[in-house]
Length: 357
Image 1 (cartoon, one colour):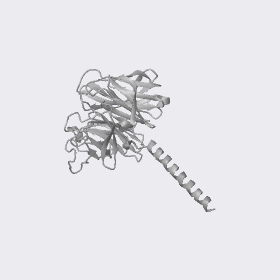
Image 2: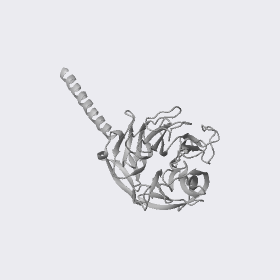
Image 3: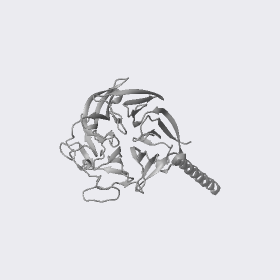
Image 4: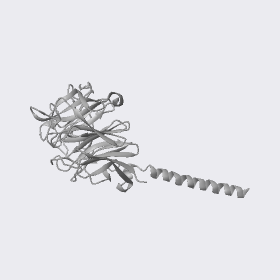
């Protein structure tokens, strides 16, 4: 009898050890992104010969990418097709301007509606606007202008747009190298804007009658919300001091009066910044509860290490990375290898990252 009890205990212990080993394998299979390095990822080129791509979105099995010259590249089953966006004011591609941000409507699969941020010429020079457009299967056609007259610049246009958890459209704008505009609430430059999907000012915006949601920004190019509804934004600094901010309504983020660890009454410091290094952060997105950040200057994909309040690089292909889209266990990236200060075409790629086996 004692022998049988002993055998039973051995079997139980062995089963526990086996279970523990299996659990460890499962844990490795679900290693947090923050625990990975470039060697943990493989990548495939899903589409090449892209011309200054700026935004990447997903509709069902299709991937959509904007190109600055005014096209949307749609990749369906690995086959890319380029579709022009027809607008009332022609899209102007100059420097970092052109067709930039894109946000698909919740019903895009059935109604073909989306929202775009693009540069155009006005009496004031380079200017930006937000438009609604519909895809008819072969091209996109503007159906409504939501906001126009946003000050533009050859380099500093912001350009990211996204539909928030509240159903409103959020838009980032650049400071246009004008020191007055980011602090001027009557100007749409150097701001994050919030509007309804038909271009109206929401009744609960922090400044009555104004699209301005937050101000004192330099050149924000990334927007993402966590599961708790907090809005995160990435922002280019002047000389280093790039920022990741948690954005709250009505808050002044200080540019150009403060940057980095500077402090001034009534102005918010960034959640974190790059110090004397330069990331040039652009598109950001949450993969579960982990914030991914693409970087142009440092040519890397970063993840936010919230415990240490820092960005940690987890992948580099040697490309300037513009935007990121997590899909399941995979991560899609687009490159923008030509600086906005340079001229000529760019030869860029859509990459798909997968966990190395």
